[in-house]
Amino acid sequence: MKRRFPEWLRRDVPEGSTFRTRQTLAQFRLNTVCESALCPNRLECFSRATATFMILGETCTRRCGFCAIQVGKPKKAEEDEPVRVAQAALKLGLRHVVVTSVARDDLWDEGAGAFYNTIQAIQDLLPEATIEVLTPDFHARPELIERVCDAYPTVYNHNVETVESLTPKVRPQAKYERSLNVLRHVKAYDPTVVTKSGLMLGLGERLDEVKETLWDLKSVGCEIVTIGQYLKPKEGKLEIEAFVSPETFALLEEEGLRMGFREVYAGPYVRSSYHAGEAYERSLVPMDIHQTTL
Ligand code: SF4
Image 1 (cartoon, rainbow, N blue to C red):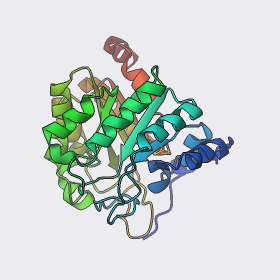
Image 2 (cartoon, rainbow, N blue to C red):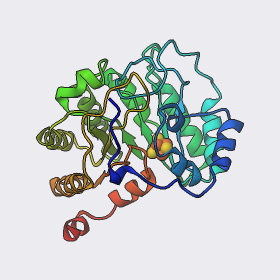
Image 3 (cartoon, helix red, strand yellow):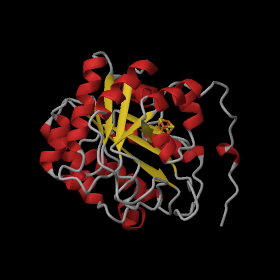
Image 4 (spheres, rainbow, N blue to C red):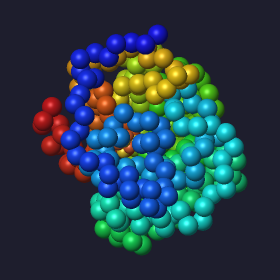
C-alpha cells in the first residue's frame, strides 16, 4: 500500500545544480551509494558538491529488505579505483570524504583491503581531509576490521540499521549482535577512531526498542548515531510501517545526548552520511557544552 507522505516530509527541490558533481563522478567512473540506493537526499547533497563514494562495484552480495542496490554476482574489483576516488574527492574539494561499499562476501577479504587502499589514496592526495568509512560487517572478522583501522580513517561507521527484533527481516544476512561486535572491536583496537552507527525508523519498531538499541550502541563505545525515517526506495522493498514525527526524532536526539553519545543526528531525512562532515565536527564539541544546551 502506498502511504501519503505527511506534511513534514514534503520539501522543496534544492536550487543548486548537481551538474558538477555528476560530471566529476562520470569523469572518474565512480559509483555512489547516493544514486545506487536512490537516496532521497541526492539532489541536495549533489548540489552541495558532496557524495558518498561506493567502492567495489554496483552489485551487492546481500539482499537487505530496505536497500535499492542491485543484488547478484559482482564484477572484479578495479585496482585503480582507490586513486580515482581520491582524484574525484580532490576535484570536488571535499574536506570530509565518505566512502562505503557494497557487501563483497565473495572476496577473501570481503573488501577490507580496498577500504585500506582507498583511505591511503585519499590521504596521499588530500592530507588535510577527514575520512569516514561505512563498512559492511565483514562477518565481524577481527583481522578485516583491523585492516581498515590500520589505514587510520577518522570515523569508522557501521550501521545496525534497525532494532534487534527486526534485523532478520530487514537484513536477513546480517546479525544484530555481529554488527555491535564490529563497533566494539574498532574501539578496542584503536580508541582514537571515532565510531558511528545508524538506524532507520518506520519499519515497525517500538520506541522502547529504539532506546534499547541506543543503549546497546553506547555499551560498545559508539560515539555518533544517526536516526532517520525509512522510505521505501522502490517496488519489492519493505513497506513503510509508520511515519515518525519530527518531535520523536527530537526526543531521541535529546535522549541520546543524555546517554552520553558525542553526537546524535536524528530527523526524517537523516541518513548515515547526510551532512557527515558537520556531524563529525559537532562530535568534537566538548560534552559539557552539549549538556548545557539541553
Ligand atoms: S545523504 Fe548520503 S547517501 Fe544520501 S545523497 Fe547525501 S551523501 Fe549521498
